Length: 201
Image (cartoon, rainbow, N blue to C red; front, side, top):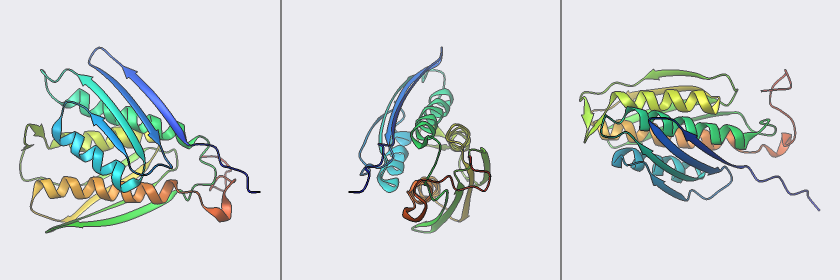
């Protein structure tokens, strides 16, 4: 009988004077989500991340939204990323690399990532408007930066072309989800070894 793999789940609670965030992930889930950050557009993007990565995601964030959305946006990414990293453990057996190109109407975005435990963000995304609803478009880079940092990802995000700012952001999150799904999937040909010649990630 095949040995049952350990559950890849983790929960994180992050609390500062500015925010309190609880995040839980199941890397081998079905894309179920329960998200509440107080920022409608960010909730929508996190739901896309969960649904298209098949990571079950629960996020509850309370932050100083009366000031602006910056702290809540960044700290939610830090908490989710930390939960992902904790759930990955030693990162043994994962495929490690992932890449996805996602079209959305007139827009097309690409994400390539390495779950290397070496955080880095390359961001090639431009917006034509300063806000989407009440959310500053500059905050999306902050979210991806914080997520890459705490999840331990080398993360390259690029919008190849596009006009609609909503489509640009959403295609980036969906491409991240699909690339992440590839990278954290267990490789049956190497299910118990770390995918690095160093023997550690």
